[in-house]
Length: 289
Image (cartoon, rainbow, N blue to C red):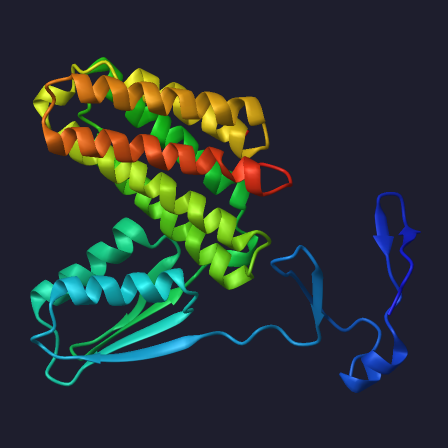
């Protein structure tokens, strides 16, 4: 069905809805409809809002904190609005601490709205659809640049705190993608994962005294900034990212740095290259550059 857009007021536009569609869905003038964007960038119109996803999970006193962390994290990232965790025997103090810590550290918007001896109810108190993906990506960019700066100075004392913030914004970004089915979902999921991996590697390297004085982090920072230009479609930047990666690997192979640290640095360089190479495969605007 082809419809023509016409001007509405000074700064808006409108389209006329088909009468049959309105009658089919029981709509009349002044009723509310719901709009969303599919992965191809198309506008999807619905008469009803997508149903909230509520989940209930049963655990017992033997359930590990690690399992509980994964349970909350998976439900957060994949769009659960209300999560009830129930234990017939009641929770241990360690389990409750794990639930509270996971929400506080990694799940912005999730809050415990009800708690008793046997169940905990966690709900999303934000409207994830109003989250700005551009701002998430820009915040991740600034946090990772901060990690590179601290390692270049040889004083990475705040990197553990920065890495926790990276995890929070990574989780928020994945949740946004899964709830909204945003355009280029696979592309942004991959870039978010690359950024989170870079930060994880930096966190490990920050604890290794011998690595702090190794003159590679300024090169990684330059490579990272160029990768964001490559992500936007700058093919010269993509090539420069590749050149820096090759130079870093050569420098590492000639150094006496320990094998684990060398692996971590190479993995950072590889993930940065992955970000830039989206410029070879995709088109469109770039919120990073």
